[in-house]
Amino acid sequence: MNDSLRQISNLILAPLMWICSSLGFVIEGANSPGDMSDPNTNLLTPFGAAFSIWLPIFLLCIAYGLVQARPRNRERGVFRRLGWWSAAGFAGVCLWGIVNAFAPMQPFNWALLSTAIIFIPTMLLLVKAMLIVTTEKGNLKGFEKIVTWLGLSLIAGWCSIAVFLNWTTQTVTLMTNAGLDTQLSHTIILALALMWGVFIILKSGGNRAYAFPIIWGLVFIVIRRLNSEPSYTVITLGAAIGIVVLIVACLVKPKTKQII
View: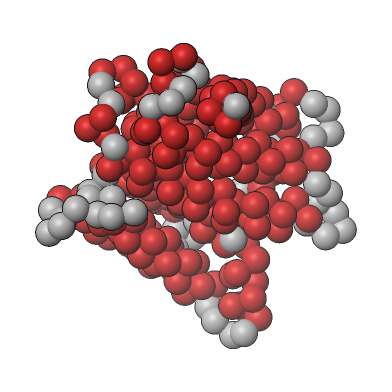
């Protein structure tokens, strides 16, 4: 019963992530994800094309949901180990999409605060699933390896950078009220995001699929800043340096196999 429920949960929640994240585009009056990413107040908002990465992520996660739902995979150890973690992470993305679409933004921006809070456990759950499937990659073959490992690695990586960007507006407000410069405040958040990314990359043994969405996001932050006025040179350089640091982290070979 638990195995079947796990399979059904992933099978349903994977496409539901896409649906819930698109509510703002199909329901009149609902907030779209873009409403949460104002480049005028959040200087770490990447150029709009960056968010196109959600398309392959959704498609791969849906394919993973189909693969793990096959009868022969019901009792397989790899899917038992990671299945509930991925399902819980997918549920978090669904909840984020619903709250983002319908939570009020005026007079207080409950949508921004609520989605930022939701994204913390969501990201941690997806990172846990990614770490599990990375250690189990040798037990997967062919297409199932591609969609399971690649899909979960990409969504974990993208959510890892997104969780910091979601908290940028609130955190920068607190830091600037305390007397810090706006650009410095954004740079501190960027540094924290990079530290987390490097930590997980090393913990995963240099999972490049996990690192790719973070690097992708940083590239589009650089593009956004170079095409904005003012460009905020420190933030631009910080993102560019971060790209190099993450690439180097991917090349570091772990001395011992990571234990989760």
